[in-house]
Length: 385
Ligand SMILES: Cc1cc2nc3c(=O)[nH]c(=O)nc-3n(C[C@H](O)[C@H](O)[C@H](O)COP(=O)(O)OP(=O)(O)OC[C@H]3O[C@@H](n4cnc5c(N)ncnc54)[C@H](O)[C@@H]3O)c2cc1C
Image (cartoon, rainbow, N blue to C red; front, side):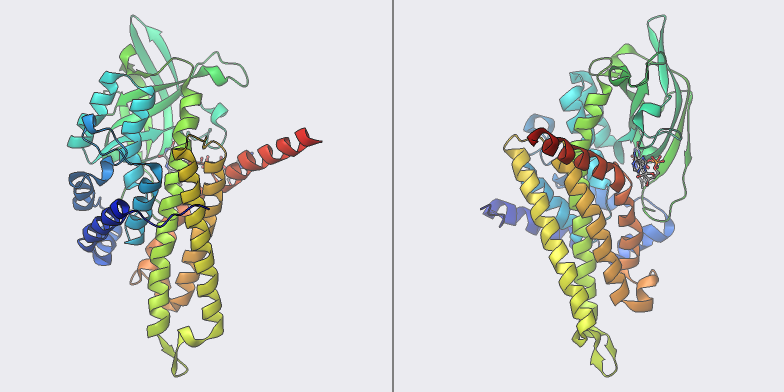
């Protein structure tokens, strides 16, 4: 059996996360959510305290820790009411460049990490190419020793706050299923020919999601990330860890909503009794707790397996599929327990409800996660016959 009770070191780290979160009460995020502003102080404190550099090598200013520890921290921050996506985007920038980029690209993102609100946004999705990556049309051509980029991306989280974008392109002459036709570029968003337009969302108001337009943007060959034609492979690797991190954030948000709902159930009196004394409310709390425990174990077991060197390709899709939906169900029940108050922005659960719904779509939809996992199950059982 696995023992996922925190080690002394992890317990200390989680205690420091809880201390940090005391500086950012519900009212802090409520204000930023209402005003649609970036929670600068919160992100800066995560940077200053080293939380955003957990898992990054010491020579880059980070602290090497295992994936189980990173997931525990992701969950604890979200449990304290932190919005999702802020950790993932900054840490992925550095880990992606370490994995696939050059030394010089790694230096560029580390410098940007220190100077900008967000380091690098992911620019994969296009208006015609969402779940179907093969349908993307952003492309590049080589001309006089330069690379000319043209196309359009959409939904890019944090694009307006980032210095760089990791842009996926496709060779224009690629055939129908061109796995080797995708190439990634590290694009400086301050370059001429780039325009952005923010999308207006139902949640996630503290960070931008933008359409990005590239019109004859001149890049240097050194902006190519890794090898030409290997972009799809790198994208899949990026998604593996991104999906596990997203599941941990969703689970933490569910824990936060559960804490609020369980407290409210003891305080709110109807028919002369706290609503927590009614069995239908108790049933909801029980179901919520069971889902939270299942999510937590699934996330930590998957992170532990990854720490042992096991591939995350399928398990990260399974974990994201389960946690994105289960977390939203928990938060929906928490909103229900708050009654009418839950439907107003006076309650924190209303923001968690709007924000966490995103996890069922971003970084691959529920349906695509089921497709990845289900296809493999069918294949495995067919092979046994
Ligand atoms: C808040 C938010 C943040 C995001 N951040 C980023 C980001 O930073 N960078 C980025 O590149 N993208 C980002 N995205 C985009 C996200 O990855 C896409 O929205 C997602 O991949 C789905 O693509 P789509 O919206 O085009 O939907 P579509 O692919 O058009 O899908 C529409 C519906 O059809 C279903 N569907 C599609 N194909 C199949 C199939 N084969 N079988 C069954 N059902 C199917 C989908 O599951 C979905 O329910 C973000 C999205 C959101 C909402």
